[in-house]
Length: 353
Image 1 (cartoon, rainbow, N blue to C red):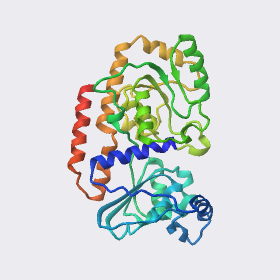
Image 2 (tube, rainbow, N blue to C red):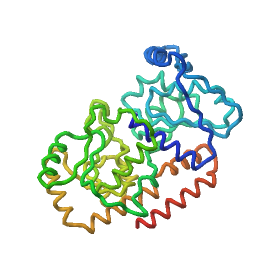
Image 3 (cartoon, one colour):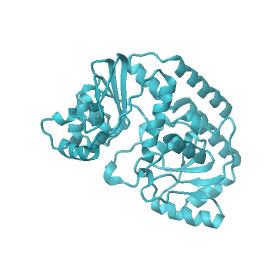
Image 4 (cartoon, rainbow, N blue to C red):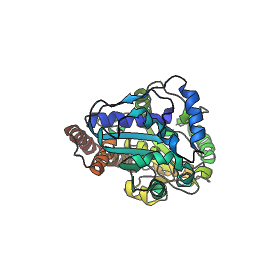
């Protein structure tokens, strides 16, 4: 699905930055049927034995020894897929799992799934607010590891394109603000790009690289980029937990002027601690028109925001930096390929400045 393409983008960067064998997992006969019932039973399995059962993928067996076994899991439902890989505990010196998305309120009821994580030496979690809850269930310390982006792909440098899209709203949105923007941009003859497909990020994509390249090209041709805390329109899912979603990393890397609501949490203030990282707009009022009118009269400020956002993302929020953090926890040294990528990122950041 579209929202999962970033996982494959991360894989691409990791493989560029290290010596990695990628293990492709493929569905076996009757996979959809078997997986459906495996998931249903796993929720209620008091024995926790199903946590070690392959849900119907074709088995893959390791044929040699490795320093590190790593898997990145987007959603909880994907965790049992690791059971399709045979020998990963025996043939890998260190094992790491990075679970991206799980809200704290869902941790306790997900303990049958999370039981799988007990087999790993190190567990990384993409939501800071879920680290403690998952650590308690797993019985070992978990590490917070934030989202990132292929900052080279998303960067507008060294040859910044024209920003022909005035405002870009990607994925979920706040309907009140959206209606205000529809009216304002129509009156001002501005180009406002927004989601119209009903399934949104759950639409299937044919090629993850082309999808991410198209997305990057659209965002770095946008002047303003709408942002909000993770699932801001789904309070029944977050239950008050505030996280920093992908939009902030993508918008900054592309050098947009991000407008909307900054997450009111320490993580955001640490990751985006530079001036004008987000231009705040009240989602429940019509002040967006006044803010955009004011910004339009400050072209130099807009240029500074754009350059600063792009430079900071290149120096802090590329997937390779997350890989370096993982290696440090696993006790491994970076490969020369990673150092070369870091050099390229710094060169682009110097251009942006």
